[in-house]
Image (cartoon, rainbow, N blue to C red; front, side, top):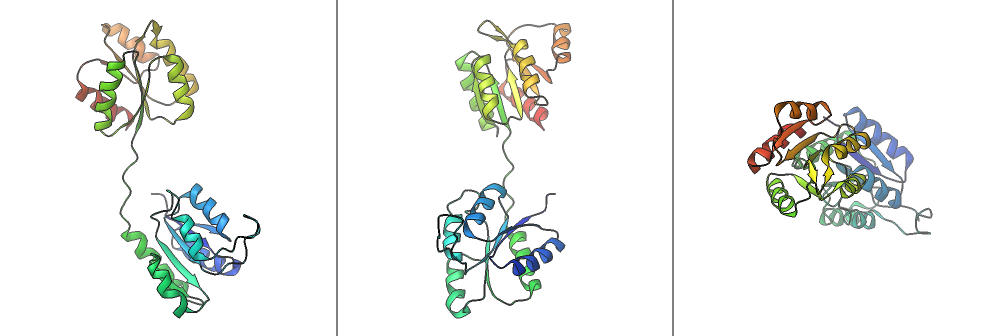
Length: 257
């Protein structure tokens, strides 16, 4: 399993180092930011599992020409990101705990620690917060469905989505190649006859441009066993005659998993 990532946001380099060492020893992947702008960029890029956030920061001259960041403003910006809107936050501060503790908890923080504090205490809260987080649902497998018939694209696409796939469709080779350039795919369903275009030629192009993506030949054409074996030898992972949607879904699940 990948280690959980904890983002420490604090302008004090010594405090960041101490916390980083303790969390790293506990098996966490530690990310560090010294101001609000850096925290937002890291959160968007790295998608941390928990954030340890200081409250008092000097003006952030590097980002926005002197934005008066504080922990509450940083938190409000983080909550606007899809990557961080639900990430648990622990506030730390050397400021007056009477002034900040209630506000921090009302802002949704899991806990508030007043500096100086024992790193072990914060570590225990971090561990508890991460263990209580529900596991995210598994990412949907993304499938490119290439067929020149609009009815098949609609019917099969709907059935595959109901089976838990994310579906991208294309009607011909040109559209399929464009789709492949913009999204990362887990599998391809490919018709053999694309309005006169040879699906096997497209399969060869797809293999060259995106090696490793499994391809399912899905056709209404009658092919004998020798022809099917030839297609499999040319790089198709599976071959399936058009028909049952349940069979298509099950074949795809086996292929991409």
